[in-house]
Image 1 (cartoon, rainbow, N blue to C red):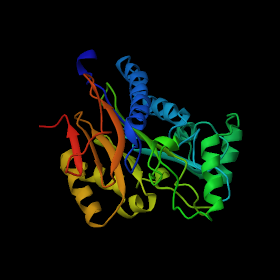
Image 2: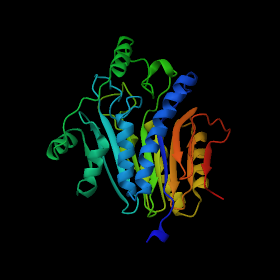
Image 3: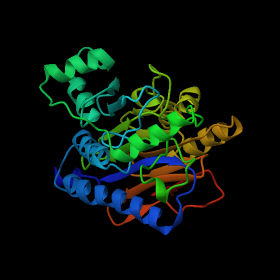
Length: 320
């Protein structure tokens, strides 16, 4: 019934890392993130389910060559692109994902198709075979900027540990890393879903597995949903997404769960960030990195964290 509907909420991210260089880089990312919110939120108003809206948001971010997911993904040490993505339906508490898949435009599409499969997480060859089985066309996500980035690093014997979080290198600190995209949504029926997609950290050893296709980096229940970004190994060590969601289920507010989890991560010298929301409509975010590239739609207004310089590790809205 219409009276039972809640106001939809959405929060998205495009990675975390070091400072954006100048207003040009900040405005580039802001336009990209806000455009996704402006596309997806009307879907929710029209009655779209959280899972479908999460997939749409991830597709748009994967298509934006600015971000390290889908088109614009970073290259690994052997010059190949291998992407990972996960989708979790919080209402059904169902997780699905792909690990190190190549030659697909939207890795999140594979995660969606796997939601109804008995085998819900596939890696490299299995994911490629599944891609062929469901008839998705092959696609080359390589961009010239990412290719040149890899060529430069190869000349230096891959001295950097990871690629830039944003592909527009002239606009971003060259040490910015931790590239991932994520979407978390509360729909009008009160359903929660979360999706995360990444090209990896760049220049990594072949076979390295990202946190993005694990509950450590992407997790949701009926109570809350979380998408993480940052150094994948740090996120895995903290089991960050699942930790925050479990704390909400155990009675903490979303803000309290973020605050406890990020205080622990900071003490453990982790480099990471996360976005999330809960079934009450509260929205929260946190970071131990310098910048979190996130934006949100409360139903009344769009906001973002791009210039958030609060001394606290965590921010939130929609909570008493």
